[in-house]
Image (cartoon, rainbow, N blue to C red; front, side, top):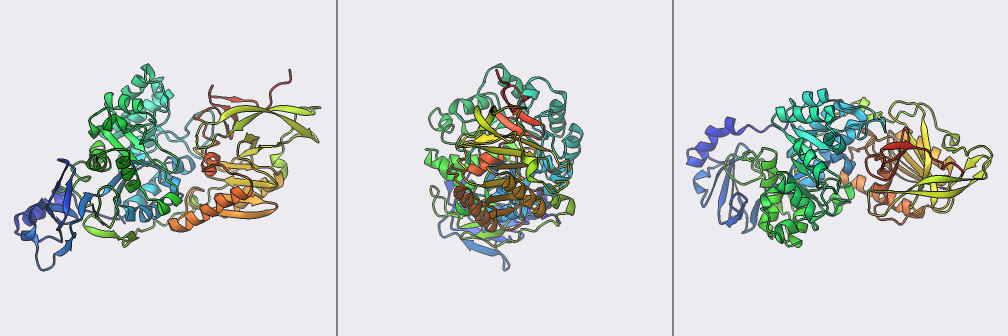
Length: 598
């Protein structure tokens, strides 16, 4: 069941009649200060809505009011367009599209451009289709970008499914597909990889937008080569020079503020200080955890933050409305309060603090005073999407043993070094003891294991990690393991590691923390081992318990779970773990765990 809205063309005769005063509006909003993002001015205007679209926008809508017209008195509040998130991953909230929508609607988000590449790694094209279908059922606009890179690094990891150029071409015909998800394989594009270029060509041939991801500081010839391939936007910039380079090359600079990303303040000076044309700048979140959505907000936070960084409030609102809509070819459909557009709007009493007092989507009130008043329908998620943790057999502690070279009393091991608040890791080494022929962690160095969970191979790759500060007998396991989403287990005790891994096999995925033989916290993520169809507040509460449990195990890092979930991300330097072994991401090749004795 798609939440249908008639097209402008289908509604035009009725919209004309309402605007002309020959027919009556469903809704009129008056006594407001209307923020016009087309002209960047505030007007003492009124709006009339029919068929979920704006029919009349002007000084006086009284000729549109009939006996059955609902009239909202805005009490002098500002009326702004509904907010758009230009680039984000729903799975990062650990929620389904329906529950994510339910969490963000009260914060004023009425449009999202989502890239479900996490589920694509687990379930392939079928998983993308499920996300797409539930997205179309919602009372707000959720557009889907077809993921481009599964696996993220071919040859260094095995995903549940691989995305092909044929998959991309097929998805381009689906009703909710707006373009291609972020093209993370930027070395592939620069080197002329035929599959990456074919995916981008299929997208452009369909008249849709190619999402970018250029995670390199080099703005020279490689950057030029990447842009020439067709990527139309980029959210990986972290400095003013990044934003300027992208915009000068005809890309949209997407500036993100999410649970772990703080890239607006350092880049918005391109507009506020250098005076660049703001039309090519877009605000987005990229990744927001459930706790952020429940406690802090969503796009309203990003706009507020941009204003706090010195951006003119009207410009900041443009960056989260009309700029985003224009980028995706939807300027005539949404992103502004103008005739024919979807009637997505927010009443707020203050343009700087941006309290979200009432949210209207397609002419219907969906949230009031921070409370959801609309229904966000659920898909009936099939068994194949719920049973994705395939361990083959119960894992024993022996699976987590690391055999030392014959006769060695100690070993020099390569260790993944976690860095607080950063995605990159350090490639470290440590002298570790050998007991009964097995290499053991000591001090801050504990064990990490990657457990294959897609094909029930029973394979476990073992290594060492430092930086979490874990002490005592403990383990934490997660089926969220960007981007391949096997299972990552980190621990100081092999029996605890086995118990944690088996527990996730039982519940169908999620995150579990164990200490001294008992489970301290469990976040169930039964859909693809990535998402829960429980409400955001429940998932956030369980995630809070998980953070508390990690602290009880000795971890004091900020946002340590994010670091844990990225330990298998084999496209970010320097050292990672995959189902094929330890990966040296400075050379993009597999490497041995132990250094050879001299």
